Length: 446
Image 1 (tube, rainbow, N blue to C red):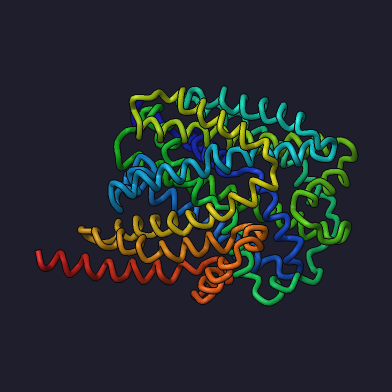
Image 2: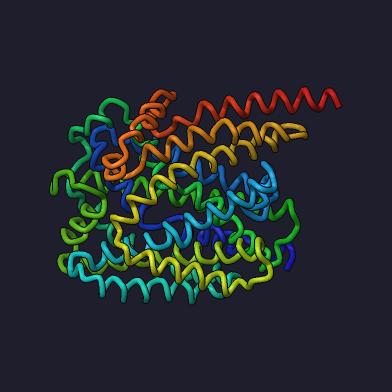
């Protein structure tokens, strides 16, 4: 298939595939909670969230495309061979069998059936069916465009449109209630923090290989056209994400007139679904969440298999996706609260490294070679703040048992923007600037 045969319809479905991979349960829950908390500051808070929840994933897609990388492995190897391998393995273990993948199964269970039963046996059965279905769909990576882009994602959008349509046609209230303190004082930065917590930049790096594989399976192989098509798909997917974030944030803000402010976005969605559809509301919400989590799980399993096959070609793709699914099944049955408590520190450690890698990659496309120091110093400067960021997010139970960890939290808070979770940002920029200067000097010396 050549360039002429890959038309607008194919591009739309590729964008749909990427959106489907991105948009999981957290992307439903966070904007709803944001709307409830922001109230009268709805618009500036939404703007802040879009900067991080849409802007960062789009930058990740662009970094993969513009550097003509096959995925995070080839991108991270620009820092160094050993770093590239270690970072790639860590990233895919975190978003695969160790944390994110089992969390998807748990989240789908808690929101859909958590009000009906807390039995661990039902969780085991559900996670077995859920992850088994994800494994079955991930067996053929070249077919993900059909499974997710053409089937699961349209089904998800239709189900979500029922809920959002009801909220817009018959609003529960306005958006003028008093915002929570942090959104009253700094709505844009607070919204940015909420979007930052979606961690979708990790997904952008992880799913790059899925999109590249899908496009190559349809004959898009020329490097420049492959890069351009990937960026266009990224714009389509993040544009759709932005629209849904706006609608979900409005739903959350308008719900306060009926339900007051809830502990989290999942409770708000459950109450809203019941308000509009009665007993059927739980069924609709369960279907929305299960499909949202399933399509992301399929993408994660496939990306894990593709990447580890590149790392260890002596093992097959089918074996790796079986390992990912089996590991996730074991950990899913620890329970959602346990997973969240112990996954957040690891996510908060690896996320600054991922953003720094993306920034270094994008800047490298705008400057002349060499890029030896700019990649390495940026990553070196951000490493300690990233470790402090991870330690600061350890569970409270750990801090109560290991008192000396409080010192790391205090050090972390000394960094600029640390109260937004961005203490690593200034060191990353500093390392990148020093690295670019050294690269420029080195190039002139040569």
